[in-house]
Length: 97
Image (cartoon, rainbow, N blue to C red; front, top):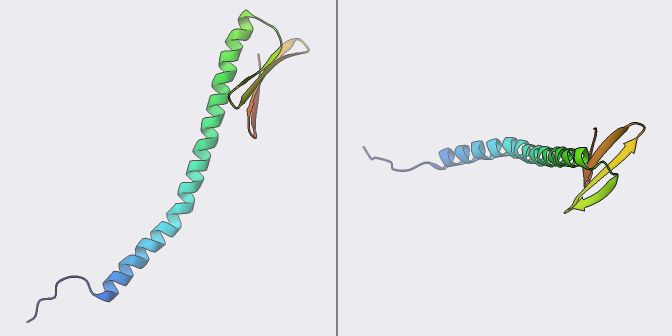
């Protein structure tokens, strides 16, 4: 009896189609995950900047607006409370102090 080494054409096509099916299903999920992580990173950075600005505001309570890189931070007094806002691109977060 003759021994066959390697894969047949059918086995190769089936394995290639399974790999294509798996990648077709997981690539959109991967891109959504990357986009979500990017937005969460932006939000975390904005919250950290608000926390830092809050510490400065406790020592020097003056309204101001400053830009750090692509981030814009504003502090303003509304009624009897201070409000700190940080924004970048389309993301904006405001926290009362």
